[in-house]
Length: 169
Ligand SMILES: Nc1ncnc2c1ncn2[C@@H]1O[C@H](COP(=O)(O)OP(=O)(O)O)[C@@H](O)[C@H]1O
Ligand SMILES: [Mg+2]
Image (cartoon, rainbow, N blue to C red; front, side, top):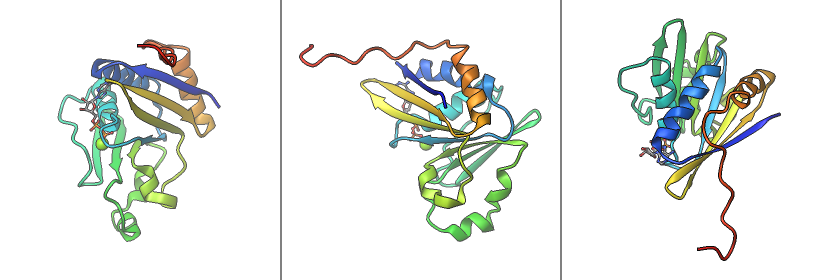
């Protein structure tokens, strides 16, 4: 499975990468987003939505658990399970139905939903690195792999710089 790693130097780089990611999305994808608070998970989903033509607000679904965006023929569901702790809520809210062949689901804090969540097609990890962000994307399915291959063949943001050597600076 391909793995992509990039360094996003600033928020503009996150915006540009979000546009790249948006260009390879296909319906039925489940994309998980892992990383600490402030790592840039919501910022990346916001960038994807902007690139898809969503002009309105993109708020963090921390309290609502999910925000729904209907973009032309595509439903994009943006989940945040940071505050999720009751499996009954999953069933009552009908979350299972959100994961279907016609939707794209972005999921922050997937680990908090445990086994309820379908397997990720693309698992994204974000990490604060200096004043920027390091992003790593890994495919978990053939479908996810095809998307990542689209990104690899069309790289627009800079590859990550080499790590500083010990003793430098
Ligand atoms: N590539 C980047 N470099 C520096 N700061 C960034 C970058 N991408 C996003 N940010 C900033 O980092 C913060 C990320 O917040 P947010 O997306 O809410 O994080 P999370 O959803 O992971 O908790 C925002 O303040 C955003 O402006
Ligand atoms: Mg968030």
